[in-house]
Image (cartoon, rainbow, N blue to C red):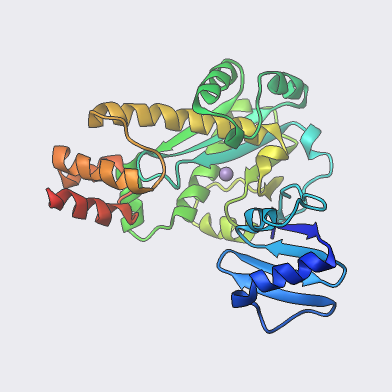
Length: 308
Ligand code: MN
């Protein structure tokens, strides 16, 4: 789990203890002065003056008191076989998906193959973790990548997503099936070339991933590695992620056109309101086409739609 450690003077430690008085825990670890538990953060203060913040809001909570002693870079975690030590410099096929948390728009999955000689070019084109890129940058980089990079793109339309979901399939299983399919497609495309490694941006532990695939005819298994934050392990995953987001943006634009207004991303309140507008305009049934209907947004949108 990510955490922040700060160091404070003894006087400050007292102040902090007072501040967290309502949330103090009874259990204090050896060498500890106090421990406190907030909804999004656990705080442990030590006699040495070191205070550790753990949990979702570790950064913001620690920031009240001082700056981190050493900021830990987010670490990627591997499941299944350990990553080859030099994987970043290898010829790698990477895969990633987009759209799983968005109420509107389809899930998109891309596998992309990056040969080691192409790594400098990808860097030059600005390929990096797509979370740090805005839509305009994504489109620009993706258009470049599409001209030369071997890839396989799969789009899961919401009609099909909703059908699978209603039949009891989890989103995790859908992802596993699509990743596997994209990887198999791409292996076929680049043949006789073979990647030195296949890296999946981890959304499930390796054994769960393969369990999801137990009924699939062809399972891409050899040389497959899993890592969280895999975009920062190899640019093939970063490129796959950019292409998946590009496809998602395109699909989203199409859907917005059909809807007659701009659909919002994510699954927040604006999304409820937009879905209510869709219901009024195109009927409840249209949600099967535009949305992932099992999200809680559906119920909220139906209520909003009835209001007027
Ligand atoms: Mn991912």
